[in-house]
Image 1 (cartoon, rainbow, N blue to C red):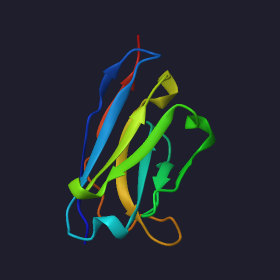
Image 2: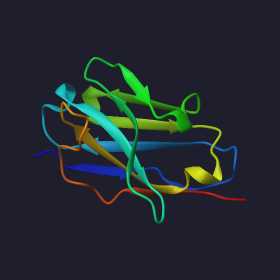
Image 3: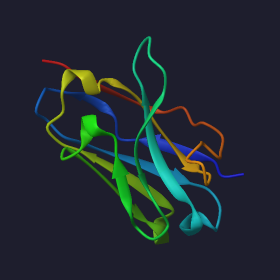
Length: 118
């Protein structure tokens, strides 16, 4: 089973940027669709972006034009570049490989906290 470790979160002012990283275990990372989720306090975890094995991407409307998902198969790593951050982006961010129904396939990592505040 694929295990992941997320990193790169922190405290940033509105309008700022962060790049999150997701390091996955296993030798077949390249075949997985990888997704980035977030969970804000009191809210359900939501899938905000994913990237297929072929490099196609999709985003939830609230982050379109601000977030960019990418992957480096040689490093078993997925990234989430977050620009023009807003206070409503504050959440714990998680990554996970996705199954064919875009559901989480692996174990959840600890996530990385992103706080957008002045």
